[in-house]
Image 1 (cartoon, rainbow, N blue to C red):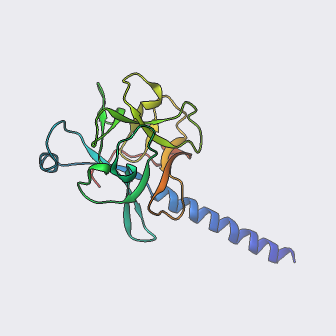
Image 2 (image 1 turned 60 degrees about the vertical axis):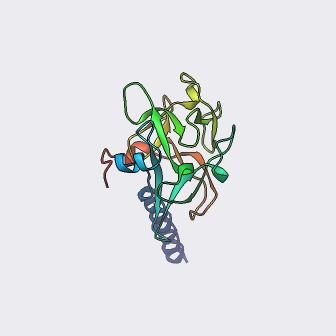
Length: 188
């Protein structure tokens, strides 16, 4: 009896570890647009790109997107199938010094920024609001693999809330070890 319990327990631990490892490989990566793509999409300010997460289970890329392609106040962000050049999936960091930090602006309306409500905690939804340069809830940092609130605990990262990934899955702050999976390779 004790041996059967040990085997079942070991199997459950292995399953939990494999699911955690799979999630760790599903990084929300920032993919900057090329200069040519930027010109084709209407020029203007450079630095736009998209946040993509590759789902190995359905061999598909999903991107952070504005619901219904509209940059409305308090619109909550979700993921959808990536479509190259789709303006509702394009974002850029407006900053002073670092390329991947500052306010995160929508390509649809660059006066609308991604924010999290005042309580930056596990499960908080990401949404849009009018940009305010020094508003702490609109300050973000990314190394290319993750996006996190500036000056927040480095265990809060933006990530889709549903498993498995699917269309219209809300984007939330998820408690995980962001630094454990960080890399500075923006090209792969």
